[in-house]
Image (cartoon, rainbow, N blue to C red; front, side, top):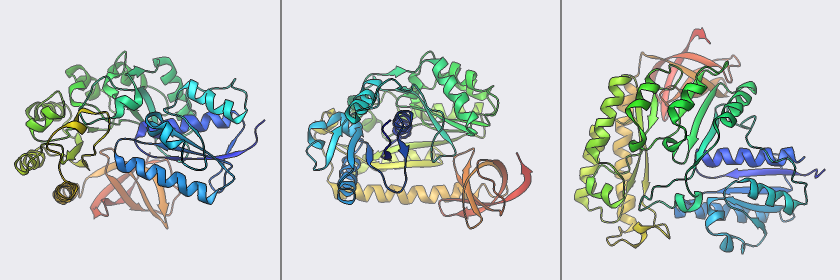
Length: 416
């Protein structure tokens, strides 16, 4: 038995965070133990969505090497998939692997000199998280002109439904009351996302299901009808828009217009009047003039989005956008980023102020000196005071005032 300790540092999306749990399960099944203080083995699960994500990963690896000169260092994830030859040259790195797969897990165990007879197909718990992410699909067949993810993650593929349901039962049995269904192109799940949701909704002990992100063109009328009929499905959806300008959407190779996106929001709001929508926005894409940026901002203001993830465009080698004319200088990209973030902050404060007096079911996650926090159904961070140990309980909170990046509330007597 290989009796050593390990740690995993994770960058990037929910799919990457799920993969880290799979790597953890692989190592624990092989007899290693997770140690938050000091370890003999360090895995760094990397992201390649932006150049800055790759830089962060390199800096983290070098810091681990400096602080743990005798430890084994392994780089995994999307950056490892795309740039193994570069990363292998970093002093102190022992092994570079890419995205998680049975083959990669076998390589890792073989490199450690461990028998490969116990490779898991799923996880039974989500260490360090109250909500459990459950990756049901990986890869993407579409080619947005700016996106490196298909090169790192490969073609779209879905996990077998029976395997997913078995994992869901295990996660709930280990105490998770909310499952976040995630994937790289989640709407491409086969046989269908609707079938998956209907299969999950009656599992005993499951209080809430949340969808992580859907592409606008994957949200069919049938799927909206299915969502409407599942009360435990959180009424919040993340629908990446990327730009509020049709000319830029076309250059991005996004297969919809702003009018289509607006019509989709109208359908969702008719079916589920209380639903909230979050989105991703890229600023500074090649060819984005000040006029195009202003047009995008005006449309974003009109859409009633409650959450925005705003990024500056990052040139990714191997993508069409990296070769486009009209690349925007960094200082202009940053100025537009700050401008849109300021606008979004004002819009979000208006939204949060409008919640005052309403109540929300919140999954209590953590407490600092009696101040609890957790996410409500609509993905806002909710804070409330209580001396009780409420971790991992669904509690009802009456919302009172915006606080930090979320909203403060008061615990009611109704604890589920």
